[in-house]
Length: 80
Image 1: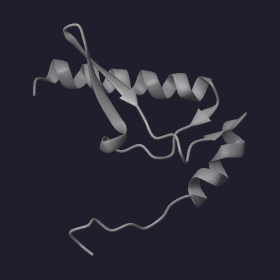
Image 2: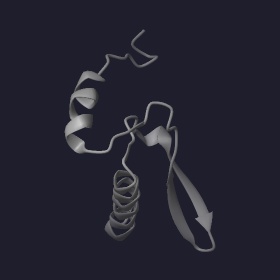
Image 3: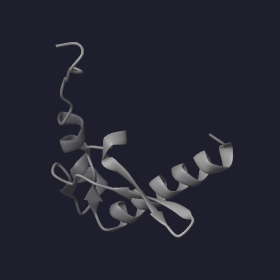
């Protein structure tokens, strides 16, 4: 994959997260499966999905303890 495409995807992802954070939304389940690709004309547009465990926080100071406590262990299906 070309660097130009990777930079575009990373930029779109970070812009989406910045938009959510400006709206006081913390998306806590960021993974490749929750980043959707949509073809709009001749451009690929990234969309964030699965807001099931997202939270709203008026300030980062209030969110930080919740975010740190929300770590969990998981296993890939191949490991189980």
